[in-house]
Image 1 (cartoon, rainbow, N blue to C red):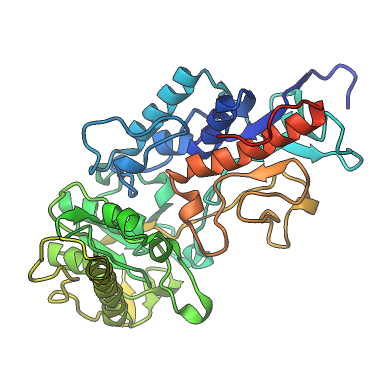
Image 2: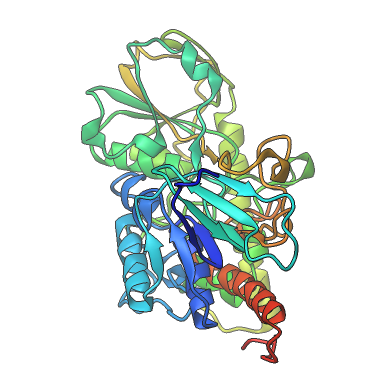
Amino acid sequence: MAADEYVEYAESVVIGAGQQGCGVAGALRELGHEALVLERGEIGQAWAHERWDSLLVGSGNRSVRFPGREYDGDDPDGFMSGPELARRLRRYVEDRELRVREHTPVREVECLPDASDHDEVRFRTRLSAGGVVESRNLVVAVGGYAAPRTPALAADVAPSVHQLHSRYYRNPAALPDGAVLVVGAGISGQQIAHELAGAGRRTFLSVGRHRAWPRHYRGRGLLEWLSALSLYDDFGTVGGDGGLVLPGLPVTAVRDKREDLNVGTLAAQGVTLVGSVRAADGRTLHLKDNVVAVAEESARSFRHAVDMIDDRIRRRGFVAPEEEPAPRVPMEHVAGFGERLDLAQHGITSIVWCTGFGPDYRILPRHVLDANGAPVQERGLLGALPGLYYAGLPDGNYVVPVGIAANVENGRFLARLIHVDHVMRSGSSTSLVTA
């Protein structure tokens, strides 16, 4: 380390000031500990600036809670915008007087190989603008969805076609005139296709395997049933051996609170469903002929969700109004498309790739990452070294730990571990048990 390099110390450094990072800092504050949170942009950066303008928080307003603060608005069953979530997170940071340093990107982290259990310094966090923050504990809260993923075949699309990932999509007016192809039928793909069609743009949606659930059923919102009937395990599992579990989370947030959003309702809206893209050749895309099969599988997942809710209500003897007919994925407008999409023939000038995100942990040393560059971790929270923690990582195929509300449980779990370490190291007689 250079002799003239500015060095400061914080017992706990948190990288990332999203809901997970701020949740850890808030939980530590509850136990009387302070953390230094380093954020490359602004508090709630991704929600405020890195998603499309009309995005709605799919987990609903009730889920927007932080350690020591429940949702306190007047629309608990609604779906707030991304910027509104970021504003609420900023107010939480200010009210709790959390120490967040914005516009402070991290260049790299050093995990000191010879650090002992008694050492104050086990990590050095080097800042891009210069300077080092030494710490005993390091919480990496950059999540598992930092790097946009676009398939390699995008390079084979003609340069005249405007292409962008959903990370960079903002609104219909920002796209060139002409029809739009949205690739991916997850939350982003369906919401963006719905918005484009609603704005009068000719819209195509390339589908892939996904799930659909009812937004509202038997007098209650889906999210209420998930909690009341202990269905989060079914909702939060996004993969399985042999493809037994459909990938992705279903769309629950829509601006029109009266309707569901799924491939059937999109087709009824006028969106043309096309098969999954498997190759590109200039202005021609080669597709799987799987539109109907994908829609039928999604419809089965929808019926399964309805049946699960009905079964739990019946077995527990709850009184809930019957809903006849039960909601479903409408298949009337779903039709096969074929194996070829000529972009020029259909006037498609833009492609929006809603093909997901991947983790980006390149700031960490290789020995704490696996062969794929993902953190070696346990339960999505515990790192490969003492004092190294994560917040907001999926635990295998279970994505509930990355949800907004999960910041409370994640933050308090990590705060308790850091508190125990502090008490034991100080030799204090303070109880290790926290409320």
